[in-house]
Length: 69
Image (cartoon, rainbow, N blue to C red; front, side):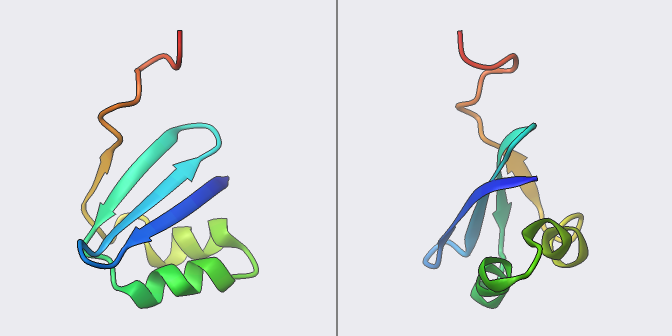
């Protein structure tokens, strides 16, 4: 489900790259949740339980709707 993740502590922004749907930014995320995501036995399960639908998010504006040409 999750291909990669990064965290900007200064902006409290979590970036998650999903295998099928692209990259999303999650705002005002505590750094402890990023640490938990990184150490979870299942990153997808952790995301669904602790992050999904709990934080404002936006799709990466640089991503093309139908993928790279």
